[in-house]
Length: 182
Image (cartoon, rainbow, N blue to C red; front, side):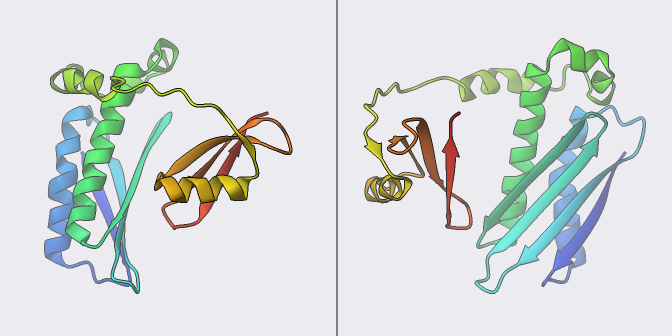
Protein backbone atom coordinates (compact mmCIF):
# COMPACT_ATOMS: atom_id res chain seq x y z
CA UNK A 1 0.00 0.00 0.00
CA UNK A 2 1.26 3.48 -0.86
CA UNK A 3 1.26 5.74 2.19
CA UNK A 4 1.73 9.50 2.13
CA UNK A 5 3.84 11.74 4.35
CA UNK A 6 2.73 15.26 3.34
CA UNK A 7 4.57 18.24 4.82
CA UNK A 8 4.16 21.95 4.18
CA UNK A 9 6.69 24.77 4.35
CA UNK A 10 5.21 28.26 4.56
CA UNK A 11 1.80 26.67 3.86
CA UNK A 12 -0.80 24.88 5.92
CA UNK A 13 -1.57 21.46 4.48
CA UNK A 14 -5.36 21.49 4.36
CA UNK A 15 -7.50 18.37 4.03
CA UNK A 16 -8.37 19.40 0.45
CA UNK A 17 -4.70 19.77 -0.47
CA UNK A 18 -3.79 16.46 1.19
CA UNK A 19 -6.63 14.60 -0.55
CA UNK A 20 -5.65 16.11 -3.93
CA UNK A 21 -2.04 14.93 -3.47
CA UNK A 22 -3.25 11.45 -2.54
CA UNK A 23 -5.68 11.34 -5.47
CA UNK A 24 -2.98 12.30 -8.00
CA UNK A 25 -0.32 9.96 -6.59
CA UNK A 26 -2.79 7.08 -6.21
CA UNK A 27 -2.56 6.70 -10.02
CA UNK A 28 1.00 5.44 -9.50
CA UNK A 29 -0.15 2.47 -7.41
CA UNK A 30 -0.98 0.48 -10.54
CA UNK A 31 2.76 0.22 -11.26
CA UNK A 32 3.65 -1.32 -7.89
CA UNK A 33 3.11 -4.75 -6.45
CA UNK A 34 2.10 -3.45 -3.06
CA UNK A 35 2.85 -6.43 -0.80
CA UNK A 36 4.58 -4.07 1.56
CA UNK A 37 4.12 -0.46 2.58
CA UNK A 38 5.81 2.15 0.44
CA UNK A 39 5.95 5.72 1.75
CA UNK A 40 5.72 8.70 -0.59
CA UNK A 41 7.35 11.74 1.00
CA UNK A 42 5.63 14.90 -0.28
CA UNK A 43 6.96 18.37 0.52
CA UNK A 44 4.87 21.42 -0.40
CA UNK A 45 6.53 24.85 -0.34
CA UNK A 46 5.32 28.36 -1.05
CA UNK A 47 7.86 31.11 -1.69
CA UNK A 48 7.58 34.86 -1.15
CA UNK A 49 6.96 35.43 -4.87
CA UNK A 50 3.89 33.14 -4.48
CA UNK A 51 5.46 30.29 -6.49
CA UNK A 52 4.49 26.84 -5.29
CA UNK A 53 7.01 24.01 -5.28
CA UNK A 54 6.13 20.34 -4.87
CA UNK A 55 8.78 17.68 -4.19
CA UNK A 56 7.92 13.99 -4.08
CA UNK A 57 10.36 11.23 -3.12
CA UNK A 58 9.43 7.55 -3.16
CA UNK A 59 12.29 5.39 -1.84
CA UNK A 60 12.25 1.79 -3.08
CA UNK A 61 14.90 -0.90 -2.69
CA UNK A 62 17.56 -0.32 -5.39
CA UNK A 63 15.71 2.75 -6.71
CA UNK A 64 14.55 6.19 -5.56
CA UNK A 65 11.84 7.93 -7.55
CA UNK A 66 12.02 11.71 -7.19
CA UNK A 67 10.41 14.65 -8.93
CA UNK A 68 9.92 18.32 -8.22
CA UNK A 69 8.08 21.12 -9.96
CA UNK A 70 7.61 24.83 -9.33
CA UNK A 71 4.73 26.83 -10.83
CA UNK A 72 2.50 29.70 -9.79
CA UNK A 73 -0.25 27.24 -8.72
CA UNK A 74 0.10 24.48 -6.10
CA UNK A 75 -2.40 22.17 -7.79
CA UNK A 76 -0.68 22.51 -11.18
CA UNK A 77 2.66 21.71 -9.53
CA UNK A 78 1.12 18.56 -8.03
CA UNK A 79 -0.21 17.55 -11.46
CA UNK A 80 3.17 18.06 -13.14
CA UNK A 81 5.04 16.10 -10.44
CA UNK A 82 2.59 13.22 -10.74
CA UNK A 83 3.10 13.11 -14.51
CA UNK A 84 6.90 13.26 -14.11
CA UNK A 85 6.89 10.35 -11.68
CA UNK A 86 4.70 8.27 -13.99
CA UNK A 87 7.10 8.92 -16.88
CA UNK A 88 10.05 7.96 -14.68
CA UNK A 89 8.41 4.69 -13.70
CA UNK A 90 7.51 3.82 -17.30
CA UNK A 91 10.99 4.70 -18.50
CA UNK A 92 12.65 2.68 -15.77
CA UNK A 93 10.30 -0.24 -16.23
CA UNK A 94 10.88 -0.48 -19.96
CA UNK A 95 14.61 0.24 -19.97
CA UNK A 96 15.91 -1.43 -16.81
CA UNK A 97 18.77 -3.84 -17.39
CA UNK A 98 18.37 -7.53 -16.60
CA UNK A 99 20.95 -7.59 -13.80
CA UNK A 100 18.99 -5.08 -11.74
CA UNK A 101 15.77 -7.00 -12.31
CA UNK A 102 17.42 -10.17 -11.04
CA UNK A 103 18.27 -8.41 -7.78
CA UNK A 104 14.56 -8.14 -6.99
CA UNK A 105 13.36 -4.81 -8.32
CA UNK A 106 10.91 -6.57 -10.58
CA UNK A 107 9.07 -7.68 -7.41
CA UNK A 108 7.92 -4.12 -6.76
CA UNK A 109 6.41 -3.49 -10.18
CA UNK A 110 3.27 -5.10 -11.55
CA UNK A 111 3.92 -6.88 -14.83
CA UNK A 112 1.97 -5.47 -17.77
CA UNK A 113 0.99 -2.16 -16.15
CA UNK A 114 3.25 -0.24 -18.52
CA UNK A 115 2.04 -1.89 -21.72
CA UNK A 116 -0.58 0.79 -22.28
CA UNK A 117 2.10 3.47 -22.03
CA UNK A 118 4.81 1.64 -23.99
CA UNK A 119 3.66 3.04 -27.33
CA UNK A 120 3.71 6.55 -25.89
CA UNK A 121 7.16 5.85 -24.39
CA UNK A 122 8.71 5.06 -27.75
CA UNK A 123 7.28 8.28 -29.16
CA UNK A 124 9.00 10.23 -26.35
CA UNK A 125 12.41 9.17 -27.66
CA UNK A 126 11.79 9.81 -31.34
CA UNK A 127 14.30 12.31 -32.75
CA UNK A 128 12.32 14.86 -34.72
CA UNK A 129 15.17 17.13 -35.75
CA UNK A 130 18.89 16.75 -36.36
CA UNK A 131 21.14 19.78 -36.26
CA UNK A 132 24.87 20.08 -36.88
CA UNK A 133 26.84 22.98 -35.45
CA UNK A 134 30.39 24.24 -35.64
CA UNK A 135 31.90 24.83 -32.23
CA UNK A 136 33.50 28.24 -31.86
CA UNK A 137 36.19 28.65 -29.16
CA UNK A 138 34.91 31.03 -26.46
CA UNK A 139 34.76 31.57 -22.72
CA UNK A 140 31.84 30.31 -20.63
CA UNK A 141 30.70 33.92 -20.09
CA UNK A 142 30.58 34.50 -23.86
CA UNK A 143 28.65 31.24 -24.26
CA UNK A 144 26.08 32.44 -21.71
CA UNK A 145 25.66 35.68 -23.68
CA UNK A 146 25.17 33.67 -26.89
CA UNK A 147 22.67 31.38 -25.16
CA UNK A 148 20.66 34.35 -23.86
CA UNK A 149 20.67 36.06 -27.27
CA UNK A 150 19.30 32.89 -28.86
CA UNK A 151 16.80 32.49 -25.98
CA UNK A 152 17.86 28.87 -25.45
CA UNK A 153 18.16 26.98 -22.17
CA UNK A 154 21.60 25.55 -23.02
CA UNK A 155 24.52 26.25 -25.35
CA UNK A 156 27.30 23.92 -26.57
CA UNK A 157 30.70 25.49 -27.22
CA UNK A 158 34.45 24.83 -27.36
CA UNK A 159 36.14 26.19 -24.25
CA UNK A 160 38.91 28.54 -25.39
CA UNK A 161 41.09 27.69 -22.37
CA UNK A 162 40.82 23.89 -22.35
CA UNK A 163 39.90 23.27 -26.03
CA UNK A 164 37.31 20.80 -24.70
CA UNK A 165 33.62 20.71 -25.52
CA UNK A 166 31.48 22.33 -22.80
CA UNK A 167 27.84 23.15 -22.19
CA UNK A 168 26.35 26.09 -20.29
CA UNK A 169 22.75 25.84 -19.17
CA UNK A 170 20.12 27.84 -17.32
CA UNK A 171 19.15 26.31 -13.99
CA UNK A 172 15.62 26.35 -12.56
CA UNK A 173 16.70 28.98 -10.03
CA UNK A 174 17.72 31.37 -12.85
CA UNK A 175 21.46 30.94 -12.37
CA UNK A 176 23.78 29.13 -14.78
CA UNK A 177 25.58 25.81 -14.81
CA UNK A 178 28.63 24.61 -16.73
CA UNK A 179 29.31 21.05 -17.90
CA UNK A 180 32.89 20.35 -18.97
CA UNK A 181 34.15 17.26 -20.76
CA UNK A 182 37.39 15.57 -19.73
